Length: 158
Image (cartoon, rainbow, N blue to C red):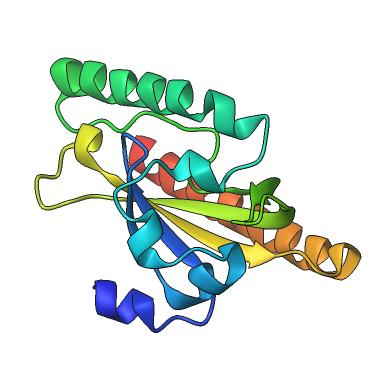
């Protein structure tokens, strides 16, 4: 799977539920200015601008706590997240320290264990070079993803 993701033309990153970067493809290296060797095994917040970088660990800890509670209570329930399954315009950080405006879409991927508290998060990144055109297209795509996610939830509840 990692080799297939490595060939994707868009920047991709994968991190553990604790924020450790586990995958970075060549387009992400080019965007952020870091090599895989410099990033893998480190906390993803090194690539984030504020205010997200300083709060990210606490967001992840809260999500992990909710996953563990859900596993104890219901077995296979996955708690909701504000970013998973949607996208947002955020400020990232280049190796040089300069800010990068990106649109980040996050997907949750289960590992072989199937445990929600042991998942990976895959970040699909779109650099925003021409915000007005790209924001419209990405906002429409994000809305379509939200609608599809809501339809799946409704179908599960029916």
